[in-house]
Length: 288
Image (cartoon, rainbow, N blue to C red):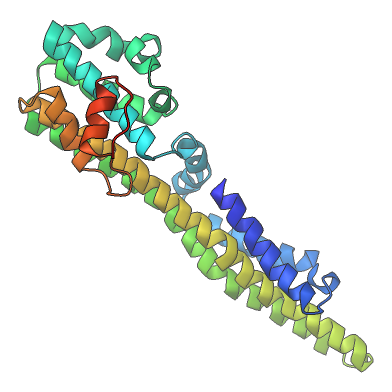
């Protein structure tokens, strides 16, 4: 939603400011300029990336769609799920949580925290490594290496579309210049036209430079930056899970293990100790 709000603000401020200054919006509508600039950008994108990168760029939006709400409430739910699973394993034995891990959709623990269930990536990460913990065949060091490797792979996958979009966005002003130069060439090739017609043709040509800069720095680069930020938010959530599970494997009680996870959060999203304690105990009391 925020990215759409940002795009609307860009459009309203740029075109609205131009109109309020007395400019006519009609000359800015140049479909052929869009064709030249957009076609060049798409062609450059295709030629600069392989099939995997192109597919990753178009699929990252779908992959991250469910990972858009990483706030204090989400992290409280995340830590509460892990706490309840670890507490169940501690009290009833490791195998007691096997049904919850194998079928999270039918687990009352996961069902009580819809914020977590809405994010398949978090659910899969929790259940995959809880399953390995239950098997008892891995030590903390091995599990840590495996989690770090998976997080690193996700980061690398997220960097591919962000990098591809950034490069296209950086190239857009140059493609705008190409469109403008072609427009000027067209105008100068008809030098026998009246001055007012010539001026109109030059103005239309310069729209290409404007569109290239606007599309690059007003839309494509912010979209690439948004992908980077969203990937970083998902990585932070995975790191919270990693730290909490490792603390449990090193022998800390569930109450202390989730405290390790809480400390891994950024300060702006980190709940207080008392807030987390009350939440995982099910009191629902919010303390500052």
